Image (cartoon, rainbow, N blue to C red; front, side, top):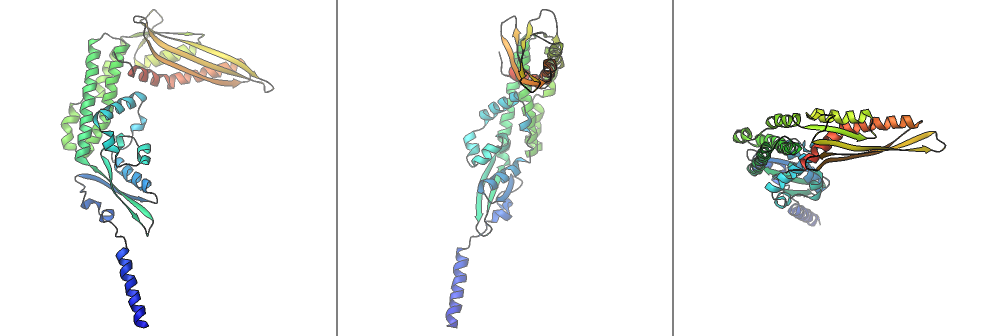
Length: 340
């Protein structure tokens, strides 16, 4: 009987060890198959597989810093064009789950792959191995940078052939945006391979070279401001934005006219002693020479106060702030969409 118990114990031990899952070597030593000299490597774990993969990818992406989210709408559109023209998105995303694709910018995923995963049944944890092939990522970024630089120089070339106008300014603004994106990519290229990247990053056109051209064009372009039902604060707010860009604001006849209609609608709230004022401002810049309408913008809302006069005053202050904060972005984004 005793011998039978001993035999059963050993059989159980042998069978248990036979079916035990071996922990992959890459969890503790990912650098064995992916040396740090050639790869960025990250191993992360979580209760959920897609979360473990996301953490691993984010760990590699953090090497470059993730500041793309702060870009303007125009920057974003140009960056997407640059990306789609240089990278096979299907190839770039084939190993990445939907949570990663929804959470992170395309830029931050360039060259990163999930190459392995493992579920530890004992710990009930998923492990994910993410890698970035430095040579592959370098090649992609270099191609994007060179393509962007070519586009920037092309827009500058077109601008220099034109007389000073908002079309000229638009083309220079496009060149500036491509150069701005390139400066971000150049930093990534330098992190991957500083020595190799030096000739590339030195050769590309910089935003600091385009800024004087933008200012020169603005300083030779006159714009008048005419707002119907205007208050002095509103027209002055528009004038300040244009002046800050460097444009000459004139009260005389000009090629470009920023015109708009400001309207208020008063409504008394019965029994509450409050008057609501709904406001709306629609404006655009018209090229009197060609008839083109540029930079359309609308702002609307509602303000309330004890008197209609005070409600209008509050509405005017809100509009003034919106002009100062939002109109400059709209101005640049709208002009960035128009190239001739």
